[in-house]
Amino acid sequence: MSAVNAVQFEKGSTSTVEAPVREKETRGEEELDLPWQVVVHNDPVNLMTYVTMVFQRVFGYPREKAERHMLEVHHKGRSILWSGVRERAEFYVQQLHGHLLLATLEKIN
Amino acid sequence: MEICREDDALQISDLDPFLAELLRQIPLSANPDGAPAAEARLFSQPSAEKEIRAEWKSYVEPELRRLFRTASETVADDLAQLNGNEKSLSNCTLHIPIEHADAWLNTLNQARLVIATKYKFSEEELNDHNRSPIGSRRDLGLFQINFYGFLQEFILRELGGQAEGEPD
Image (cartoon, rainbow over all chains, first blue to last red; front, side):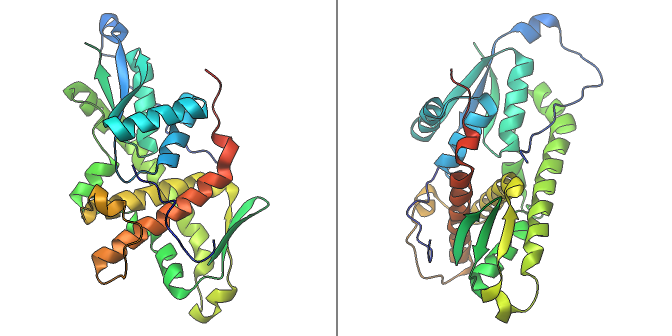
């Protein structure tokens, strides 16, 4: 992630992605109940302030918690933002992609 | 160039032709057509699992395309205010309704990601904010990324508390 605070120039409707519609549910209940995690990966283009705002909006995290995760992504390359049932995890990943963050859904071993 | 908040709008005024052109280029720059790597970055894989990727391609990716296109069209409509005589640009003020702020943030991010991917900028280059002068199309690309980032930072600052989440 990058910050552009140092950039010097002369003087100085909330969008959401709708949940996917599935024509047919093909997964068994057991599989759906397995824990999943939402992981965000580092991207040198996305601004730190932007990533923090996205975490606040998508997960409802307070600024301090959102910043902690943002810094973890920045310094360690990835951060686990949320863990839980697959359907919810998929929804969060979808929201994060809607904000153009690199996010993945991973099964917890 | 001046940028400020005025009631329910963000205003960019006192534009010179160069920065006005960079603003006009935002929707075009956000378009990944013809650049497979940029397309892959905007629509990145959600999982290593085949089944999830297949579902995503069918159900989620079309929604994301719609979202990104709508945001870009909103920005393009706002930028229509800049159409006209270049000589009158200094008297021209671009008004961005605050309800369009999310569309601008999204489209600026699309543009920054597409440009960065097209020119394969390294993290070091992306963090070099004082690079100058502009001697090539690639240098201009880096300037665009920084200029669009500057606009994002301003919009984020003006949105301020709207992003505050619920306490843990």
